[in-house]
Image (cartoon, rainbow, N blue to C red; front, side, top):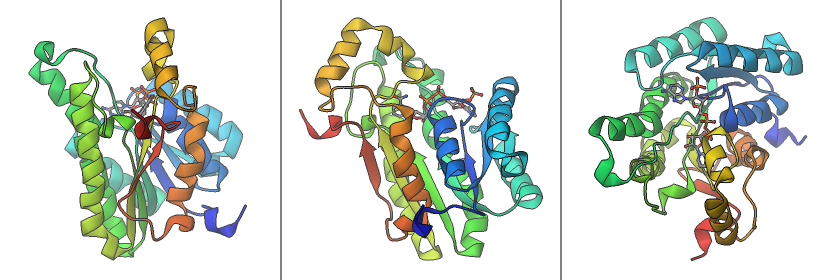
Length: 256
Ligand code: NDP
């Protein structure tokens, strides 16, 4: 692999990497040489992923941490523990997220808040704590996992759309404050990717054919489709890329 994309010796935290997109992004970073901290909320599910990664990449390059990304105190404690017990964080992928499908008129205030907290506030909380050390050291890469939904609205996922739109702008805001300290903050906006979160949509014949018709590439994305862009944004190959959100969506965002 070109030196430009070599992540050997770099410590990466991927939130929500116990499954789905986060797990694949963590594997991609580990393949590129990074030491990876796996993360989730459910300790049992996380333990299974840790065991698979340890077999694949070796115990010395795989660590794990369990905390709720919406809990400011838990986030601060976890990042402090990582920096003192494991090492300086060089790469952060803010990936943990949830969806809650219900029309706006039926959306309870607490469900709105939970979606905003998990998809948007979490990136502020984890990003802020991780950036404290990165700013001191003058180096860091933060990747916020947005969505094609940052720009496109669709009924029943309004809170999610608002959160992901906010996350795209938070990516720009973080850039305005931290780029001068050697930190690149960028976003990846996946289109429709087949994971546990979207399994019910894949199974819904009508929705499935809408997706295929709406996506110029005429297929669902796979988690593997996101690996290359994530490695690039985490590596020295993207050192002058600041505040951008890259759409990995089979062309969905550029057609009407
Ligand atoms: P999954 O539902 O498969 O995985 C979600 C992950 O986030 C899990 O590891 C889960 O941990 C973790 N998580 C959720 N809430 C919290 C929380 N409060 N605290 C800590 N961890 C939490 O989702 P996907 O892999 O499909 O999605 C990952 C990201 O990609 C999300 O941000 C999503 O919005 C985004 N995305 C997904 C698309 C898709 O088509 N799948 C398209 C565009 C964007 P645990 O298992 O412990 O609950």
